[in-house]
Length: 97
Image 1 (tube, rainbow, N blue to C red):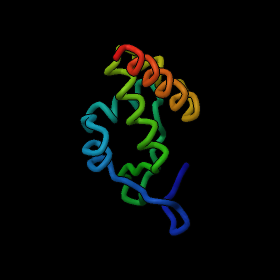
Image 2 (cartoon, one colour):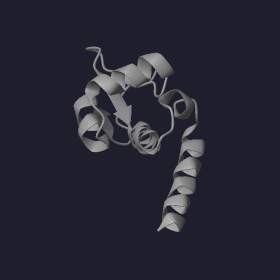
Image 3 (cartoon, rainbow, N blue to C red):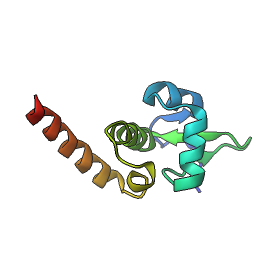
Image 4 (cartoon, helix red, strand yellow):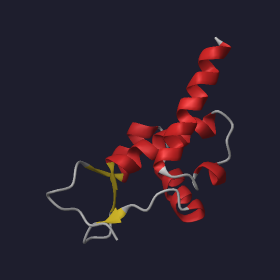
């Protein structure tokens, strides 16, 4: 399990992730429990914290879900695959004008 330390890049609490991604804290918790979308670390007090990569993955997942993908489908993708799908979506959107 991840634990915060000084060597880690930025870490984000669930409220910050909600604001930055546009996902509610409820949705973040559900995507975690239902689909294993991300596995946030926990502080000693049990609070969730997310890494920059978690934040990026969740932002991409929201974009793909908003475009019609099922959360269960995108939650299984690796960060690299999520980025690839996001690029494909951008190409389609660009071509559509």
